[in-house]
Length: 178
Image (cartoon, rainbow, N blue to C red; front, side, top):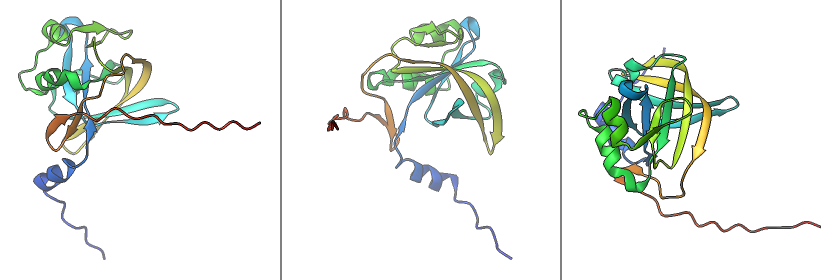
């Protein structure tokens, strides 16, 4: 008979995860006066066919309670110059409704959900499924519209700090077979 080892503590997991750099995004749901947004860094692409993405939020987050399967949601990738926006929407005192849209300088996408006007990229989704797990909820969205708006440097979260990465140097060797 095998014994399952005891899980690591939350503090130990958090300390280790700080060593893994992640992108920073703003998740928004709702429209106009019902807009709710929050900063997220637990995000990944799940599938290209069908186009699915996943964002993980705490089960008590307002966003988790405000969105249901079939609802629209938007994930916006933020630039290094948007750290104020990251911090504002990571705060428990973050705005909602029209105030949230104004603070993010938002504009409604094709799905009606606002996104920051200067986001590097925007994924408009329909919530395909919501999976409760542990103290979080996995929100899996079917991407129905994708927009790339800028070549600015991305916002990155690493070791508990907001930072960025240097621009990639594109050196591509071309080979022509005749």
